[in-house]
Amino acid sequence: MIQSAITSKGQTTLPKPVREALGVKPGDRVRYAILENNEVRIIPVRSISRLFGSLKYHGKPVSLEEMQQAIIEGANR
Image (tube, rainbow, N blue to C red; front, side, top):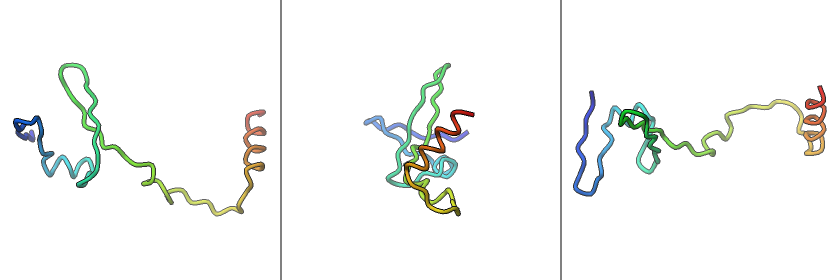
């Protein structure tokens, strides 16, 4: 089990194995989820900008009107 100390200001340093497991780097943010039985889950906060370019679309560009029409047609099925 990995441990770290709490400073007089209530701060701690995430040990290297924890940072690596979370994939966080200096400047990144984490969120704390308080669970039952006095357990806390540390969750990395991911920026939406990290998703840029993750989806590839090779079709022709479509207009907003065409998108809205496709949504309407899909909802009516």
